[in-house]
Image (cartoon, rainbow, N blue to C red; front, side):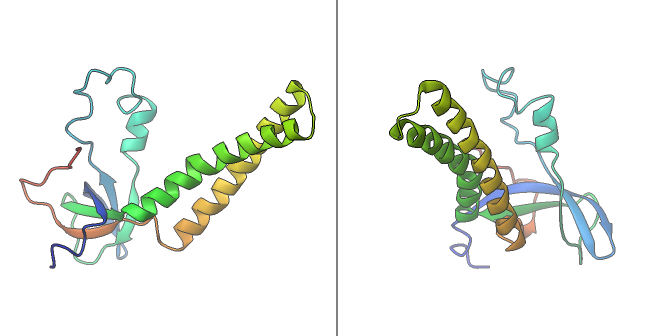
Amino acid sequence: MDPTRNRDLIEGIARVVSVEGGVAVLEPEQTTACGHCVSASVCGQKGGLGDRLVARRFEVPGDGLAVGERWVIGISERSLLRASMAAYGLPLLTLLGGGVAAQAMGAGDGVSALASVGGLGIGFLLARWRARSLEDGGDLSPTLLHRAGSGDMCHTE
C-alpha cells in the first residue's frame, strides 16, 4: 500500500463486534488519552452521553473479518469537515441570519430573538438534510485500512 495515499484520512481503531450475512459491525475503541486529562470530569467524553458516543457502532462489508479483530479505520478529513460544518456551521449561520435580518427590518429585540430561534430551527433542518446527503453519498462511511497490530494506537495529537 502506498503510504502517501491515505494522508488525508483521520485514523482510528475499531473492534469487530459481530459478523452476520456478509456485514460486520465495528465499534470504535476509546482513545487512551480520554479520561487522563485535567478536564476529564467535565468534558462529556467520559461517562453518560460520552460513553454512548464512544460506543457508536457502524457497519462495513464483512468478508474476511472475524469477531474480536481490531482494525485501523479511516475517514476523510474533507468529509469530517463537511459533516462538522453541517452540524455546527449551518445552524449557527441561520441563527445569526434570522436575528440580523429581523434587526435590519427594524424589528425590536423580542422579535429579533424569535427570528433567531426560528433561524436556528431552519438551520437544524438544513443540517439534517445535509447530513443525510453526505451519508447517502458514502462520505461519512469509514474505510477499513488494515488490521491493527499490537503497536497500533489512536493518535490523539
